[in-house]
Amino acid sequence: MDGVFNQPEFGPCPACGVLLQVEVFPALFRKISTGRSGEAIMVEGESSCFYHPQKKAVLPCDGCGRFLCALCDCLFDGRHFCPACLETGKSKGKIQNLENQRTLYDGIALALAIFPMIIFYFTIITAPMALFVAIRYWKAPQSILRRTKIRFIAAIVVSLLQIAGWITLFIFLATRHGTHV
Amino acid sequence: MEPMSEIHYRRLTRSRARGTFAVAFQSRASLWLGPDHLLCVDSSGYAETYKRFYLRDIQAVTIQETKRRTLWNVILVVPLVGCLAGLLTSLSSAPNDSPAVIVWLIVSVIFLVPFLFNNIFGTACVCQLRTAVQIEELPSLCRVRKTRRILDKVRPLIVAAQGGEIPAEAVSAWMRDWAASSAGVPPAGTVADNPNIPPGLAP
Image (cartoon, rainbow over the protein chains, first blue to last red):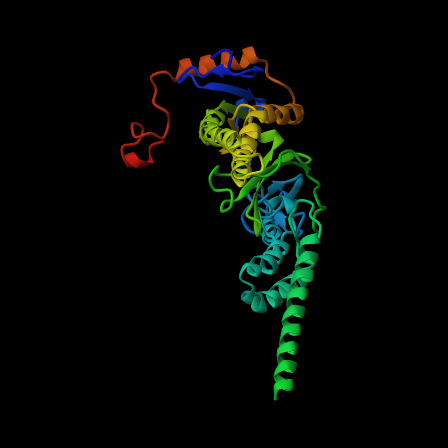
C-alpha cells in the first residue's frame, strides 16, 4: 500500500499494478453524520413544525419564515431552509448553488442564425426565429459562468442582415416583375 | 426568498470533449473553482449542466496513467511517415513548385500538428474525484502535467477546508489496517449478504 497515497509521483496499484497517484484528504476518514428525526412536542402550547404539527419547532426557515422541526431543517450554504423553499430556490434559480442546468439561449440564437446559412433557403424561416430568441431571452439568466452578450448581438446582427437580404431580394424581384409587365 | 449573490468562478481547465472521437457531438467538460467548491461544467453549446464538489467533501483524487498518448502517437505516426515519404518522393522527382509537393506538405502538416501537440501536452491520464457518495471522472483533466498543476492549486484549499493534511504514512497504515480487517469478508451489499438480491445487482 505504501508509495501510492499522498505521494508526489506515481506508484503501482497493489492489486493490478496500474500506475496511480492518489491524494487522500481527511474527509475520507470522517464518519457520515446521521440525520435528526425531530423531537415530539411534550408541553401543550409549544411551537410546532409547520409540516409536522406533532413535532417541536427548532428554528424558522430563512426563506419563508415557517417554523421547522429538526427533520425539516435543511442546512444549505449556512442558511436553514424548509424542503419547499429549497425546491422553489432550485426551480426558480434563486439559490444559484442548487441549479444544475441552464439553457444557453444565446448559443441557440447564434446557431439559428449561423448554421442554416449552409443551405441559405432555410434562413427565410430561421432568421426571424433567431431574432425572436435573441430578443425574447435577452434578459434570461445565462450561464452561471461569466458570459458576455456577444452571441446575442452576433445573432441579431446576422439575422437582421439575412432578413434585409431577403427583403432586398423580394423588392428586386417585385420591381423586375413590375417593369416586365 | 431573496436571490443569493452571483458566484464568481475561476477557470481551472479549458473545455474538453468527454469522448475522444466525439468532439462535435458530445458535450464538453470544463473545471472551475468557486469560493468553496469545484464546479464541473458540461456544455453542449445550447445547455449547461453543473456538478459541484464541495472542498470539504472531497475524500480523494486519483490520477491514473493511461496509454492514450502512445495510442495517438501510433495512429498519427503511420500516416505521417507515409506523407513525409510522399513529400520526399515528390521533391526528388518534380520541381519544388509542383502541386503534388504542396498537397503532400498540407497533408503532412495535418498529421504533424496533432502529433506534436500530443507529445507537448505530455503523458495522458484519467483523473477521478471521490466524495462520500460518488466517484466522478473529470474529463478535462486528461494530462498528467496539467492535472498535477491543478491539484497543486486546489490541494491547499481542500486541506484548509478540511482542517489539516494527512501524512502519507498515516494513510498507508490506515489502508493496511482496513485491508487486513476486511480480508475474507465479502463487502456489504453483495449476493453473499442477501440471497434475495438478484445477482445482477451485485457490485
